[in-house]
Image 1 (cartoon, rainbow, N blue to C red):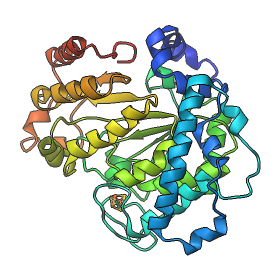
Image 2: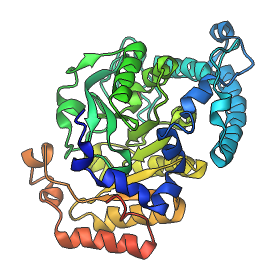
Image 3: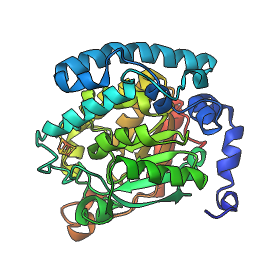
Image 4: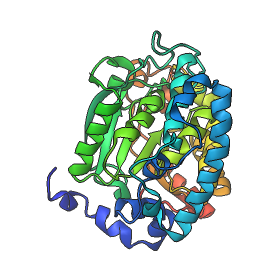
Length: 377
Ligand code: SF4
């Protein structure tokens, strides 16, 4: 990594002088500074009262029942740690029984046997077949590096780009790895993925940024990688948030900071431009869970031209009413790409960059709603 990265992104240093950023990203900041362990390390030390070898005799329903009761206690503990500190006291080297992380790994691997990681609910056995996302059983990593272009509090971000996606955004900026060349990159198992994360952490990553494409189809291996990960680095979920409630429920205890993409303010635009059914209902359902947990969250909203009334305004209004603890990144960098260029008549509404007046209107809406966006947009 270039040692003078702060010359390229000095805002990654001075953003931490903002009291709003410190307050809203408090847990992430403390983990990043090593004052607290990442959640996966606490979950890895948290007993379930069940022996690991019993898992094979238990049905998915039984596993979920145990998970529900153990994770409820775990969340209470995490609330206390987030409030008063002391997380390192709960990190143990050895555990005689199965840990909460072991249980989550088992459940994840059951979910991909009839895949229901996301709301496409393909039901395929991912060991043999692929679903809508066209992702195999093991993730393919297209690239990984220290990203200097993310939001200031995240830089330098240890970003891992997985190929494949469960969306079909017609304007995707990463269409090569998400929709076209999804067999590119290298296939990784959980141990190799942990090694990649350790390499990024050793190079100075402030977090591990799971992105794509989309990380959700790879969730089972990402969660398993946390079993082998030896570095106390915060885990960041950079996602379209189209996972099922069950997948989110298993994942959420392991993520230190969320970076969701919230593009559309209704189901129709999402269906037409990303081939995602019930988008608004699913994403707001999942965001409600994350926002309600009090976890650090930065919500990204990409301003699409001609979509201020149908998307930008409802998205920002929803955030203002349901997720006051979020920082918001109002993104102005949209430009026509991929299918929008190939079929500019069909996608006439988004076949140009947003006007400055549209970006200013997005900022005005955010100002009127009292959203915290200026620190990072
Ligand atoms: S992750 Fe989603 S799109 Fe991919 S196979 Fe599973 S349910 Fe289908």
